[in-house]
Amino acid sequence: MSDEQWYWCLEHKTVEVREGCRSADRLGPYTNAAEAARALERSDERNEAYDTDPRWNDDTDEDGDIDEDDKQGWGPFKH
Image 1 (cartoon, rainbow, N blue to C red):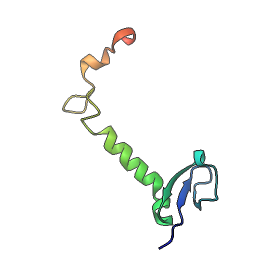
Image 2: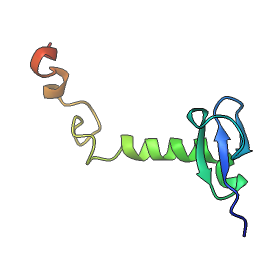
Image 3: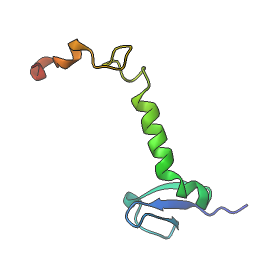
Image 4: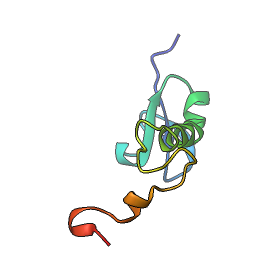
């Protein structure tokens, strides 16, 4: 098994090894090229899970609609 690390380059939209682009322009490290190639898909899946997790989204009612109270805002942002 190799200790090589793989990354998904956001700038070039390709998989690269450690000696690739700067860290700010890539996701990783991943243990293999296939995992790195799936980086954006995994990110989308995690974002979707977060967006639909009721523990983090208390501004919606049971139907997924924004609660009327939350439409009003709060503090200086109140409408």
